[in-house]
Length: 196
Image 1 (cartoon, rainbow, N blue to C red):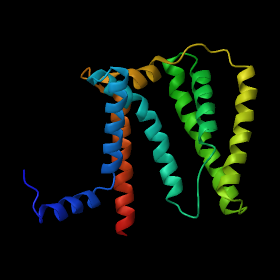
Image 2 (cartoon, one colour; image 1 turned 45 degrees about the vertical axis):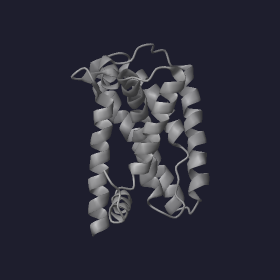
Image 3 (tube, rainbow, N blue to C red; image 1 turned 135 degrees about the horizontal axis):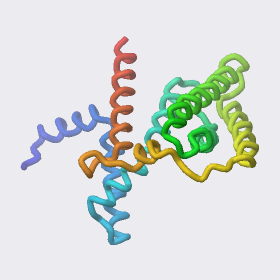
Image 4 (tube, one colour; image 1 turned 90 degrees about the vertical axis):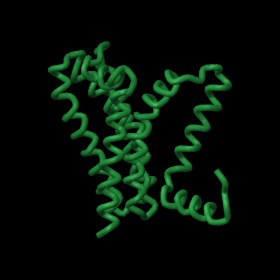
């Protein structure tokens, strides 16, 4: 393939229209570099990496939504909320699929409530986002420490394990497909919002 004077501007235009391409190229380059250094560059390592990255991507998408609201918004309580959510989901489910039906909505409701507290602190009380969410994070951490003293569950509900570990057609991690679906939904939502 020859790169003439006309093809270079076209290539640059394509790159400009797909802003996430650099992140994808960087991620692929990092996976290749780590695979070469660890002598473990194969499809299985890519699948394992994408499974782990899926959890981080979901968190990053939430942080992206906070940042896109503008005004220097950032949520520093996210790691604390994740820890609380893990303890609560495991504690409420207690290794039972039936209890997981109740655990997931309760955890989502508590996470949303913490988000409302953060929003109220920033919007109504005019506390800077970095301070408000850091303070909320410390309160959540205190709740985790208190809950941890009474935490006795050693088992995770099988349905939650399946979501985290299962693969569709033996290849595609379920959590990766869930992450892709969330990315598509958020992309459609943000595209619709930007066209208004």
